[in-house]
Length: 262
Length: 248
Image (tube, rainbow over all chains, first blue to last red; front, top):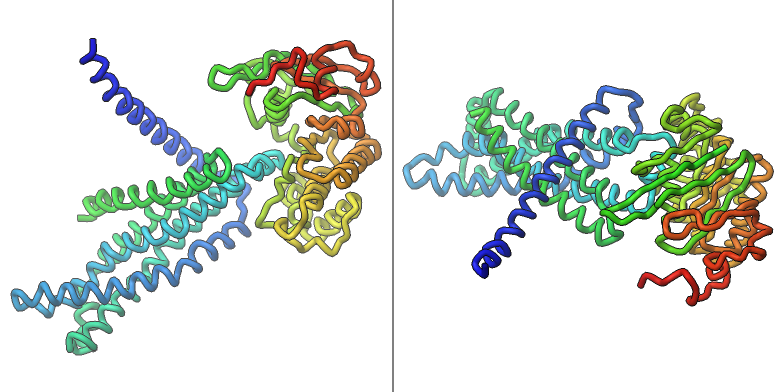
């Protein structure tokens, strides 16, 4: 009997956590289905969409650009260091390019935007929830998914590939600057190697990844924000959950998409 | 005009509404009173369709809300939320005209701004705050802007959720007077949720007291003091001794 109680006291919390996890997954799945169903039905709030593109896309440019610049530079140094061990220093331009475009650009861009945007969306919508603004929207004949979720999801899904494309160029530029200033590479040879090595598939796979990551970031921000409760503490919790869940999902989706494009 | 029939609602096996029955006639101002946690706000959210009841029905002019459709019902009412619930990202005139520029029969921004200005003046505020954002307004001003938004589309029914909560006595008096004037002037049906008896006396024609999830007492505002109901007497006196037990 004592053994049964001991095993039960260990297993019960595990079982409860597992059930809670599946419940959350189910709710997120239903939220995604509901969001997608609203994509096809008017009204559309164009003003909210453009303002979301500005806030989410344009204002994320500095953080994504700086991340890409320093990542490209560090990548060039690391590849040079590794390549020098078997006299393959010349691979720096091609590996920096493929590393940035296929992997680091979308993943780091996605994670930076998750930190900046998922938190901001969750905090904004969470505050709207606890101050009854979402209830007010409903009473003013406006569906919160249409007015709040759709513009943010669209804006992030459209903006992130553009941000990543710009980040890729800045990252390659970072590698280029380090290569010609620190590693004595010839500038024109570096650029020629970069351009000749990259294929269209490398670029499109990175941009498709970025688009999926953008969708994940906005969905997590909106879901956790709109389902927050418990006042200021609840909004804080929603913000943490939005950033953590979107970051984990980005890394999971990255692996799955890499397998798909492999 | 509004008939609430046997509404029941529970959360996590705790019964909040145990079969509420209430009738509000056209043009009447009904005030729903009761202690904290008695289900007043839940009742309001059930009427608005923000919470689904476990059972019971609500009728609007003898038609069940489930038959009228939520959109049609929403188009006929206005709502003043407890904290104003103004949209932080929109300025005052955009808040007031929110429904006008988005709902059915939408109007252009210029007309919407003009209507917002008229409604703002109706609630005693000057047009120079039209471009301000909610964070730049005092609590009393936010409440009045919320009231302007509630009447912007000339509704037939207006709901007021704790309209004087968080206001000083003078501002609370101003809001009460405004609500009373607007209700009489527009001839609307009003349902007000409050535990502020000064507000209830200023706004209401009739009162319904909710306790333990049912309507404990209902009658005209003038009959309040004549009632022998021990629950109502204790509530009006604000006494801790009586049939209403403190839960904590």
